[in-house]
Image (cartoon, rainbow, N blue to C red):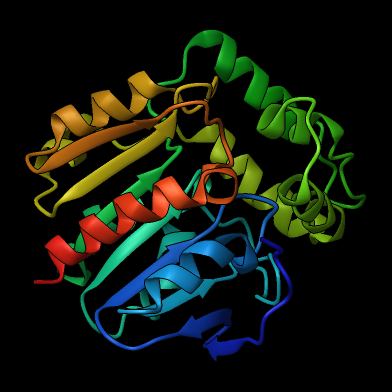
Length: 259
């Protein structure tokens, strides 16, 4: 599929793609991307749901947050989109936001799906993500070559091309702000996961070196109603590269929660 630009609606300072009618599903993308990254999920889920895909602050058409925001500020900027209890789906940094939202605004979340979520990085991974964050100056657009290689390997394709264009056109300030928070955070606390009561699905790829299968399994094992799914031959960008498999999991989860 192609990931063409779609028309936006406004929720306060956030720009969103909205589609469909039914139970509310909110989609939160990762650092450097934009709402169109969910193109395949918007098309599938909107057949039976009201889907709102946000441009996170400082990305796409959404304004940056003022000052020196933290994870809670990003989360709280999205709460206003949840005008009814929702199923919240986040990818990478978006999964970090979705988890924080489910923990701190539990009355707004009736189901959680965390894709490629990090949890307790090892020392090598912590140093690597810190070095990447420190390399961002907030003025110039970062060279996306290394990022695309981590996400897609050496292969080519439309998904990689789309991500390259988004990374080349992202606001350097918004990108640096979000990436610094992503690098500093290390996933939800033990108490947060144990206390999470809504159904939660954790999904990653078996080829994912950063948001590893063990991270998803460990988080799912701590949540009362948690489950992990590991997609074969998938890495970081599975919403784009493994949309058919992922959409099947999402449809089953959503239908179970929305009853």
